[in-house]
Image (cartoon, rainbow, N blue to C red; front, side):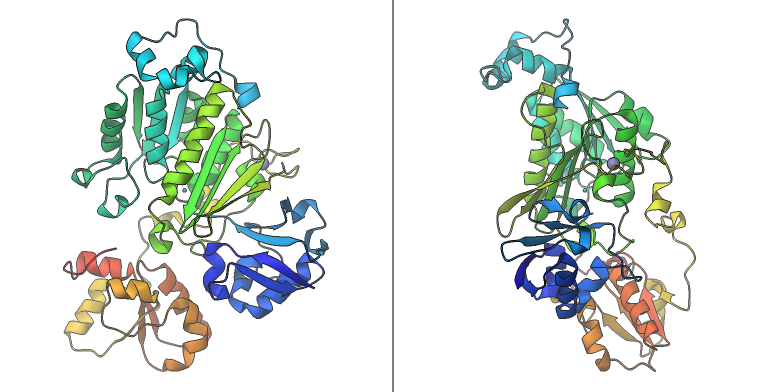
Length: 483
Ligand SMILES: [Zn+2]
């Protein structure tokens, strides 16, 4: 019996771009085994080396997680749909604000918020709740832009923003808090100026720091709601754990390419992020927006949904998105809603938690801390752009291979052969295993994987170009376009 399997956008390159695949099988396990037989490259995303399911991928039958059905033995029939939900790198009742009696609205504010005041669910009382609300945004980027702008416009009394980045030209395609004239400026300064321009009645607190286990609890303590607008896994787990430990709602959003996810994690009344994804993906397997790309308007959509949930939390109105994960597929224009269950074995919000304080999140996510300031170059497997340039200048005939996608090659290339990483297994015969090969991609992640793959298959002299074509453009040839 053929069962429909919905493929998320990050895995579609491995199914010949198909978003739905029909696969034979009577149980989830059989269907997925047959799926990986038909599309070999999906295997490493679903199963770890020992053949067990990866814990950062969730499998749903219709709207239920198979962990709460019969796991891989869950029987499926013709009418069922299996969804693969990978993690991507981004309270009403209990929380109803007691409006402090001294909170008043000025005549100017009454006029400004008049379209709120005439909605029964908001009214004067609700607007005062918004004014007394304190919301902390983690990140002033793609998701933080609409979140900050709508919360400022709505009159949320205090907005905190944590960020340490500067505005880069590549941000402007989606991070609408910042303008062209802000390039090179701190994102916090730029965000503050934009938000104060929208609404001078609110207070904005900025924290120019990298969120860490040392500062998260102190930073979060003063706020009612935390909005996760980060782009990396260590920070997502850190935000989650700090919110669980402090008993605060975490309004979650993430985006990649055309896919978005939104939920509200509140461990007091539902699951947390760890209940959904107990472990992070290994570094490099899930591309970041810098490597994988993201459609500019997508953070606008997902961030606006986050802003909506924050406002509902502050007002104490409506049904919050607790225990539900909403998936948006921009290409198909579908919203799907999946049930999330609290995991009784969750290490932080389960029945017998093992995590009682913040941990080392870089280590938890398998990221070597020294990787932030790079370790010494391993000459056997790596080469810097300066070293490569010197060898080319010496007239050495170095074989360079580009493993990016053709559309990236079209933007900029070094005039060297192209074999996209995804095609490497079937095109390996085009390469000479006895020859020295230097591999590059955009920033060095995919080329490191390609180099490791070739070494496993007997290529002796394979090196990864550290930092990829991005580093080459920065340090060697600034006339090339950057993307
Ligand atoms: Zn949990």
